[in-house]
Structure formats: structure tokens, C-alpha cells
Image (tube, rainbow, N blue to C red; front, side, top):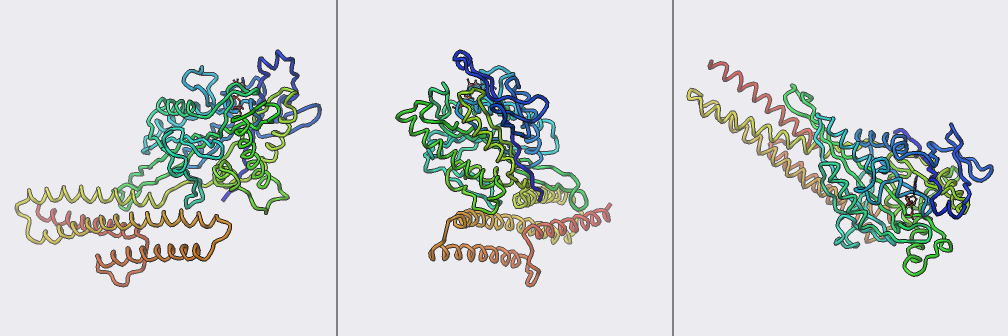
Length: 497
Ligand SMILES: Nc1ncnc2c1ncn2[C@@H]1O[C@H](COP(=O)(O)OP(=O)(O)OP(=O)(O)O)[C@@H](O)[C@H]1O
């Protein structure tokens, strides 16, 4: 599996009107025709992409995000996250805020990516797509569903699936069919997000927000099956996380008190945890050390994006103002360290679900074939009684496939449950005896279910000692038998013409 580095971009926003009015000096500049940034008089940093004060939203999108959208459609998970001091331009860049009223050129990353995803879908006639979005925020270390505010925080849980990908159990996933639908959900979520006014930023995000678009594509591949007469399905589910982190802030500078002060503490501790993860992953001297993903919700959520299986771009936003020199230098140091993080992107084929789709499809074909042949039989008065066993055979095949599908579903559900549970335990620091016992019980149960599924299938076929194989191979056997039956039946009818 190929390792690729997390790509790091730095964007320096222009001085804001109030900074110009207060006569702030510029202390961060892009060195023209390079990928370098200079801060102060002589601190130079090199990044994958650098964007200066006059860079446009379009440039940022095309350079950093477009390739990720293409990867998403290919089947990779992707993440872009914006990091930086409060007021440095993260929400502006990611595309939060009032997406509906914003002028075209000012649109941030999310609306542009959505546009492109739907464009790609419309240009792909060979697959069926199912697109869903979810939007959650981490506010003071609690998860909140921005698309379903009634959902209690307690009902949202962070879990890992069997591939190690982070999933939020309980978060509302809305099925969407158009760009406008996504934008109105985004707008709704943005309106529900915790924001507040601080001395540093009039519309400061007080939470980390994760907007996720999940694309499920089922490729229709005619003729791939034996004899070219049925459809093989490839199912890919890939996700794009757009993460707008809350900004780091110095409490003395923001002048925050009361609730804002409490928020600052939580924001900073989440970002500190993120800094530690970046440091553990990005510092070659700490290569073999423990990565403290579990120290905060945001680091747990970003686990597969940092050192995991996704393709990731980190956009570090910095203020050019000399009054923010220390914060900007810090952000650049973090960004520099993040360049050493390596991910191992993997394609998200879903072989199990693919098999289920395939089985469902075959059942459909079997049913259709059965129906049309039954009709044929009833219209053919000269058909001799020898046809009856064939009809019975097709009935029995259909029953077996249906039974197999039911067994596979039960088995799949059970395994999924066990995997989630076991992975949870695996992540725990240590297991006590009771937990180890429970773990063993789950292993035993899975084995039993699998055994029962196999023996019941063998029983239904009258097979005693056939080699154990995955349920998939039995479907293929059924398919083959059905084809043999079809050929025999054709010959049979031909002999009457
Ligand atoms: N590249 C840019 N060009 C023009 N204006 C910008 C740019 N980046 C940010 N701004 C402006 O700077 C201000 C602060 O930006 P924004 O709210 O995006 O910061 P933030 O990093 O998300 O802050 P916080 O962490 O407090 O939420 C906004 O008024 C925004 O419009």
C-alpha cells in the first residue's frame, strides 16, 4: 500500500479593514514564484501550496481540493481541514457562513466541491449513485448533530468500522439529489453552529465543525459475468470530510470571560490534543511513539485523516498582521510538522455489500426468468410432463438463493456488531477478565453463526462434505446450475420446433 504525505497549504489573508485602520504592519509574505512563506525578517517555510493575500477562492479550490474530489469519485476517502488562529480565515476558506447569499467568486471550498461532485455524477452513466450528507460539531467536547438538533449528545458516538475508518453512530445522514439540496442543508447546519462575537472576530466559530459528504456508487458492469448475460456490481462508498476547526486563541487577547472563556479553554485543549497528534505523527524522532488520538473528540474524529487511510489536505490560515506574529509563527511550525505525516490511502470497495447486491440481482434475474418461462410453459400445450422436474428445480434454486440471502444478512449483521464492539475494546487501555471473557464469547458466537449458516445451506442442498467456501461461491454455483438448466431448456424447446 503506497504511503503519501498529508498535503499542507498555507493561506495568508489580507489585512482586515480594522487592522489597516489601526495601522497594523504586515509580517508574513509569500515569496513570489516559490512555495515559500517568510515570516518576520528571515524565517522561511516551504509548503505544498502557498496562497497570498490576493489569492482567490477559485485558486485555492483548484490547486488543493479538486484533486481530492477526483479521488473521492475514484473511491478514496478525503479530508480537508482548516487550522489556524481565530480570525485567520478558516471559515471563509472552507465555505461555512451564509452560503446562500454569498457571491459566486467568494464561495469557499464546500460549495465548489459539491458542485463538482454532482457534475461528475451526472457525467457517469455507468454507475448508480447514492449521496448523503451529515454535519456535526464538537462543542466543548460534546458532539452535536447540526442537521438534527433534537438528537441528544448522548446518542452520538464515535466508533471505528472494520477498516479502521471513523464513523459517528447516531448522526443524521440526509440523502441528497442536487447541489441546491446540499447547500440548503449546509446553510441550515451553519445557522445552528455555535458562533459568537469576540474581540478577535465578530463571527467567531466556537466549535469544530465536520461536514461530510458520502458517495455510494454501484457500478453496472454488463457482461462481466459468466457467459456475459448478467451484471456484476462493484460497490464503492467514499467520504469527504470538510473540517472547519475552531481557532486557537489567547484568552488575554480575546478578552473572553464567562461562557466565551470556558469555550476558549475547551477549544485550546482540543487543538492542543491535535497539535500532539500532529507532533507524534510528524516528528521523525517520535515515529514509534504512541499517537494520542483518544485525548480529544476532534483527534478521534480525524484519526483516519491523520496517519490513516484517507487523502488529506491541511490548510493553515494565517493573519499577516504583526500583532499576530507569535500565533502565525506557531501555526506555520505546526503546518511544517504536518508535512511529515504519511497516510496510506485505500480504495473503499465494499466486497460484502457487493456480494449482497450481486445476490439480490441474481435473485431478481432468477425470478424474471422463472416468470417468463412459466408463462411460456402455460402457453405451450404440447409440453410433455418431463418439463415438470425442471420447473421444480428452478423453484428450489430460487428458494435456496432466498434462504442464502437471509442467512448472509443475519451473519453480516452479527459480524458487524461484533467488530464494532471488539474494536472498541481493543482500543481500551487494558482489558479486565470479564471483558476478555465477553470478547471470547463474541468470537465464539460469530464462529457458531458462521457454522450454522454453512451447515444449513449444505443441508438444504444435501451436500455433506463439500469444501467450505464463502456464501458468494454458492451463489455462483447456483448461477451456474441455473445457466445449465437454461441451456437444457432451450434444447428441449428447439426439439419441438
Ligand atoms: N482570504 C480572505 N480574503 C478576504 N477576507 C478574508 C479572507 N480570509 C478571511 N477573511 C475575513 O476575515 C474575517 C475572519 O475570517 P473567518 O471568520 O473565516 O476566520 P476564522 O479563522 O474562521 O475565525 P474563528 O476561528 O474565530 O472562527 C472575516 O471577516 C472574513 O471575511
